Image (cartoon, rainbow, N blue to C red; front, side):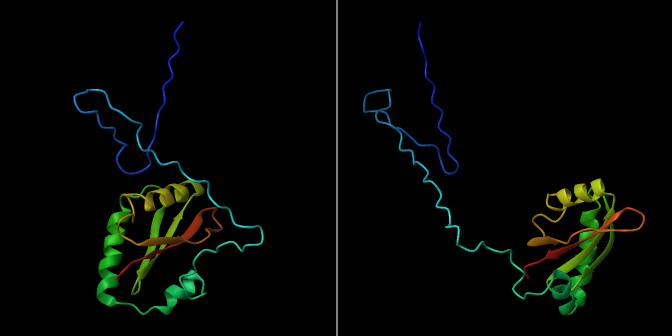
Length: 158
Protein backbone atom coordinates (compact mmCIF):
# COMPACT_ATOMS: atom_id res chain seq x y z
CA UNK A 1 0.00 0.00 0.00
CA UNK A 2 1.35 3.45 -0.93
CA UNK A 3 0.61 6.63 0.95
CA UNK A 4 0.80 10.02 -0.67
CA UNK A 5 1.16 13.25 1.21
CA UNK A 6 -0.01 16.41 -0.47
CA UNK A 7 1.07 19.76 0.92
CA UNK A 8 -0.71 22.92 -0.10
CA UNK A 9 0.86 26.32 0.46
CA UNK A 10 -1.34 29.39 0.31
CA UNK A 11 0.00 32.85 -0.17
CA UNK A 12 -2.06 35.84 0.92
CA UNK A 13 -0.21 38.36 -1.21
CA UNK A 14 2.46 38.58 -3.81
CA UNK A 15 3.56 35.95 -6.27
CA UNK A 16 3.81 32.32 -5.26
CA UNK A 17 7.26 31.21 -4.15
CA UNK A 18 9.41 30.10 -7.02
CA UNK A 19 11.87 27.25 -7.23
CA UNK A 20 14.44 27.24 -10.00
CA UNK A 21 15.59 24.05 -11.69
CA UNK A 22 19.26 23.09 -11.41
CA UNK A 23 21.27 23.78 -14.58
CA UNK A 24 20.79 20.93 -17.07
CA UNK A 25 17.93 19.48 -15.03
CA UNK A 26 14.16 19.66 -15.36
CA UNK A 27 13.73 19.08 -11.62
CA UNK A 28 13.74 22.05 -9.23
CA UNK A 29 16.28 22.05 -6.43
CA UNK A 30 15.88 23.42 -2.93
CA UNK A 31 12.74 24.26 -1.03
CA UNK A 32 10.65 27.31 -1.82
CA UNK A 33 11.26 30.35 0.34
CA UNK A 34 8.03 30.61 2.35
CA UNK A 35 7.53 33.17 5.12
CA UNK A 36 5.96 31.81 8.29
CA UNK A 37 3.50 34.30 9.80
CA UNK A 38 4.20 35.46 13.33
CA UNK A 39 1.59 35.16 16.04
CA UNK A 40 -0.12 38.49 16.76
CA UNK A 41 0.84 40.26 19.95
CA UNK A 42 -2.22 40.79 22.09
CA UNK A 43 -2.47 43.88 24.30
CA UNK A 44 -2.27 43.53 28.05
CA UNK A 45 -5.58 43.41 29.89
CA UNK A 46 -4.90 46.90 31.30
CA UNK A 47 -4.36 48.46 27.86
CA UNK A 48 -7.29 50.69 26.85
CA UNK A 49 -9.19 49.51 23.77
CA UNK A 50 -9.17 51.74 20.69
CA UNK A 51 -12.32 53.74 20.06
CA UNK A 52 -14.03 54.44 16.77
CA UNK A 53 -13.21 57.79 15.20
CA UNK A 54 -15.70 60.57 15.79
CA UNK A 55 -14.62 62.63 12.76
CA UNK A 56 -12.17 64.51 14.98
CA UNK A 57 -14.68 66.87 16.56
CA UNK A 58 -16.25 64.88 19.35
CA UNK A 59 -19.69 65.90 18.01
CA UNK A 60 -22.34 63.43 16.95
CA UNK A 61 -22.65 62.86 13.20
CA UNK A 62 -25.78 65.02 12.85
CA UNK A 63 -24.16 68.00 14.60
CA UNK A 64 -20.99 67.64 12.51
CA UNK A 65 -23.10 67.61 9.35
CA UNK A 66 -25.18 70.62 10.46
CA UNK A 67 -22.02 72.64 11.21
CA UNK A 68 -20.96 72.58 7.55
CA UNK A 69 -22.12 75.31 5.18
CA UNK A 70 -23.69 74.25 1.89
CA UNK A 71 -21.48 74.40 -1.22
CA UNK A 72 -24.33 75.09 -3.65
CA UNK A 73 -22.70 73.87 -6.88
CA UNK A 74 -21.05 70.75 -5.48
CA UNK A 75 -24.02 69.85 -3.28
CA UNK A 76 -26.61 70.03 -6.08
CA UNK A 77 -24.48 67.91 -8.45
CA UNK A 78 -23.69 65.38 -5.73
CA UNK A 79 -27.33 65.09 -4.62
CA UNK A 80 -28.31 64.38 -8.22
CA UNK A 81 -25.58 61.75 -8.60
CA UNK A 82 -26.55 60.05 -5.33
CA UNK A 83 -30.20 59.90 -6.41
CA UNK A 84 -29.16 58.34 -9.75
CA UNK A 85 -26.88 55.81 -8.04
CA UNK A 86 -29.61 54.96 -5.53
CA UNK A 87 -31.83 53.73 -8.38
CA UNK A 88 -29.60 50.60 -8.48
CA UNK A 89 -29.82 50.05 -4.73
CA UNK A 90 -32.25 47.35 -3.67
CA UNK A 91 -34.47 47.42 -0.60
CA UNK A 92 -35.57 50.59 1.16
CA UNK A 93 -36.41 53.95 -0.41
CA UNK A 94 -34.34 57.11 -0.36
CA UNK A 95 -36.68 59.68 1.18
CA UNK A 96 -34.22 62.56 1.32
CA UNK A 97 -30.73 63.68 0.32
CA UNK A 98 -28.94 66.80 1.52
CA UNK A 99 -25.30 67.69 0.87
CA UNK A 100 -23.07 70.34 2.43
CA UNK A 101 -19.32 70.86 1.80
CA UNK A 102 -17.78 67.41 2.34
CA UNK A 103 -20.69 65.18 3.29
CA UNK A 104 -24.23 64.26 2.41
CA UNK A 105 -27.07 63.05 4.62
CA UNK A 106 -29.25 60.31 3.13
CA UNK A 107 -32.55 59.44 4.79
CA UNK A 108 -33.58 55.86 4.06
CA UNK A 109 -37.00 54.39 4.93
CA UNK A 110 -38.28 50.81 4.73
CA UNK A 111 -38.92 47.55 6.50
CA UNK A 112 -36.16 45.97 8.57
CA UNK A 113 -35.22 43.56 5.79
CA UNK A 114 -35.36 46.32 3.15
CA UNK A 115 -33.08 48.58 5.21
CA UNK A 116 -30.65 45.67 5.73
CA UNK A 117 -30.54 45.05 1.95
CA UNK A 118 -30.00 48.76 1.31
CA UNK A 119 -27.09 48.91 3.76
CA UNK A 120 -25.43 45.99 1.99
CA UNK A 121 -25.99 47.60 -1.42
CA UNK A 122 -24.73 51.02 -0.28
CA UNK A 123 -21.40 49.42 0.55
CA UNK A 124 -21.19 47.66 -2.84
CA UNK A 125 -20.73 48.71 -6.46
CA UNK A 126 -24.51 49.32 -6.62
CA UNK A 127 -24.29 52.11 -4.08
CA UNK A 128 -21.56 54.49 -3.00
CA UNK A 129 -18.52 52.19 -3.01
CA UNK A 130 -15.77 53.96 -4.96
CA UNK A 131 -17.73 57.23 -4.90
CA UNK A 132 -17.84 58.30 -1.26
CA UNK A 133 -14.76 57.99 0.96
CA UNK A 134 -16.76 56.68 3.95
CA UNK A 135 -20.34 55.97 4.92
CA UNK A 136 -21.43 56.50 8.53
CA UNK A 137 -24.72 54.89 9.55
CA UNK A 138 -26.86 56.00 12.46
CA UNK A 139 -29.02 53.67 14.52
CA UNK A 140 -32.35 53.23 12.75
CA UNK A 141 -35.44 54.77 14.35
CA UNK A 142 -38.73 52.87 14.35
CA UNK A 143 -41.62 54.90 12.94
CA UNK A 144 -45.24 54.53 14.15
CA UNK A 145 -46.14 52.49 11.04
CA UNK A 146 -43.46 49.90 11.92
CA UNK A 147 -40.97 50.95 9.23
CA UNK A 148 -37.43 52.03 10.02
CA UNK A 149 -35.78 55.35 9.23
CA UNK A 150 -32.01 55.30 8.87
CA UNK A 151 -29.71 58.24 8.28
CA UNK A 152 -26.49 57.59 6.43
CA UNK A 153 -23.76 60.19 6.11
CA UNK A 154 -21.64 59.89 2.97
CA UNK A 155 -18.28 61.55 3.53
CA UNK A 156 -16.30 62.75 0.53
CA UNK A 157 -12.66 63.68 0.06
CA UNK A 158 -12.59 67.00 -1.78
